[in-house]
Length: 326
Ligand SMILES: C[S@@+](CC[C@H](N)C(=O)[O-])C[C@H]1O[C@@H](n2cnc3c(N)ncnc32)[C@H](O)[C@@H]1O
Image 1 (tube, helix red, strand yellow):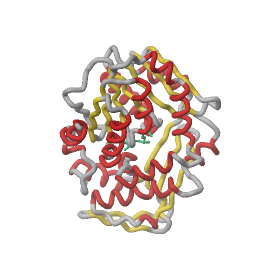
Image 2: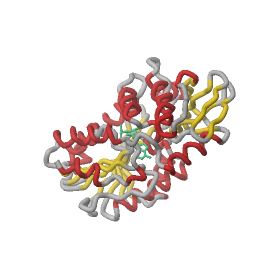
Image 3: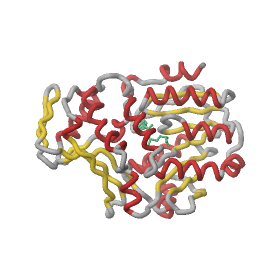
Image 4: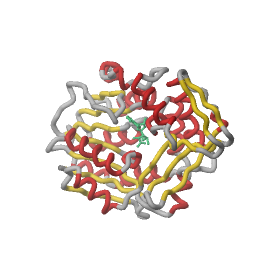
């Protein structure tokens, strides 16, 4: 199947995170962020094979409303979407993961092409294979890439009628100026006859938000701590997951969930060529997840060059799916 060749053919070596060690640029990025105070690890490093599997588990948790709410909104408006996006389009999913949502979307829209983009190679491979089985008429391409860097699409991906699909409220992982830049890149990718179909998590009671990022079964805690194992493999550090407690809280002023790993005691971490000491209680910031109101998010889309915006929400107004056109 041609998409398998595309997986390897489209992998720029510098953006391959499936490899056991970091590229020089990743090493600099990781070590620099670990040495500053407060320390951080970019959330894209959550997604090694185990991290992607843990994320899938999170999406099935009772506390984690975003996945099922977004799927419900999409399914409820499948007819309208199919009217608005005629068969034969090129759907490009940004951060496709296991392609679960895209499988449904391709069944509704009958696109000619589906292009899956993700940093997590293992997850993407399984996802595109399943999608190809479910939608045999669709031409599938997969590109493993860090989407914060330049993106090169396979040469045979049509330029006309592109639909960027960006579900899961992953846009919330970027602060608003970065989110604006990302939307501008998507606007450039879809051209003048394309569209953006995106899911965005909305503001809601703090207790609902905090439970979604700190579930009773501890799956999100395991997902958060797993980033340290991944970093160990990438830069040769000796983080011990058990030294770190999972913290997730809603920062009301910034309108974002923050995830941190907090040192339970004084922790000494070493990596080849360096290391640092974390005091007891000191933390490593691992993720932000910004929450929007629909008005503010529409303004962001308009700022990025999307003039026509349609939005659908669930009955509780917890999540929105937007279809935006230039
Ligand atoms: C929150 S998950 C969403 C997955 C799926 N789209 C969904 O809606 O369930 C985020 C996805 O984006 C990918 N991702 C995160 N940062 C990335 C980056 N910088 N470049 C490419 N993919 C990235 C992850 O591997 C993961 O599959």
